Amino acid sequence: MLIVHDIELAREQFVRRGVEISPIFHDEAGIFHRAGTQGRVPGLDPQRRSYCSWASFNDPDGNGWLLQEITTRLPGRV
Image (tube, rainbow, N blue to C red; front, top):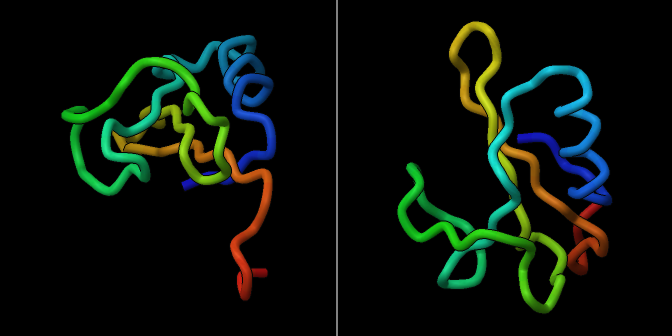
C-alpha cells in the first residue's frame, strides 16, 4: 500500500509514467476492507474523508498495489 496526500495528483503522475492504474474508487460500505473489486464505487469518497479514496495497479512482477488517500491522520497514528 502506498499512502498519498492527493490521490488525484498521484494517479495522474502514475499515468504520465505509463502505469496502468485503476480509476479512483471508494468502498460502498465506507472504508475499503476487502480483496478483489466487489464493492468498489467509481470516484472519490463523496465526503472526501481521509482513508476512503483508493486506486490500484500491478507492478511488472504482478504484485498488486493500492494507493490510499490520507489527508488527516487518525488520533494516535504517526
